[in-house]
Image 1 (cartoon, one colour):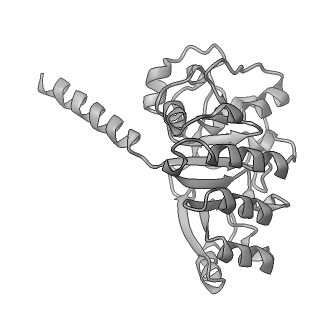
Image 2 (tube, rainbow, N blue to C red):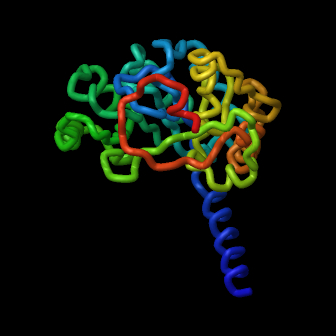
Length: 275
C-alpha cells in the first residue's frame, strides 16, 4: 500500500512541477541545419533548405504578443534546424524584442557558426539583450572557445545541453499505427513545454510541427487532427497555450517512448525514426 501511495504522490508532484514551468514559445525559423544528426526531432536531415518569411514571422509574433495574459510567456526561443543559418536573423531578433519586450529571448545554436558571425549580429545581440544558447555536439569543434568569444563580444550565453556526453542522444520514434496511449506518452514526454510556431500554427512540440518533413521524404501520411495545433490568429488568451502544453493532443498517439542511442550521422532512412 505504501508503494502505491508513494507512486501517487510522485505522480502528483511531477504534474505540479511540470504545470508550474515557465511558459515559453519557440519560433522555428528553419529546419535546415549544418549538422546531420541521426534521428533529429525536427527531421532536419530530411528538410528542404527553406526559411520562414519575415512577414509571417512578424504576424505570428504580433498575434501571440497581443493575446490576453501574454506577459505570462516568459521565454521566447528562436530555433532551427540551425538558427544561425537564417539569412535575416538580426531582423528576426528585432521582431522578437519588439513584440516581447519583457521576455528572455534565446537564440538556440549548435555553435559551429558563431566564430563566423558578423559584427552586426553581435551588436544586435547586445542591443536586443539576446542570450546565445549553445548545445554541444560530439563533433570536431572547439566548444570551449565559445564562452570567451561571447564574453569578448559582451553577449550573454549559456550551455543548454551537452550531447557529447554518454546517453545524451535520443531516438524519437513514431508509431505508424498510432496505438500509443496519448496520456501516458504526454506525461512522459521529453519535449514537454516546447510550444513550436511554424507558419501560422502553434504546436505542442517540434516532432508534430515538423512531421511534414518526414511525410515529404518518405511518402508517409502522419496526420494532424483537430486539437493537434492552434491557428495563431485564433488565439485569444494564454490559457489556450497552457491547455495546449499541459494536455495530450491526438498526435501523442504516434509517439513511442524515446530511447538513448549513440551519436551517428544520418543516412536519411526512415528506420532512424521508426523501429
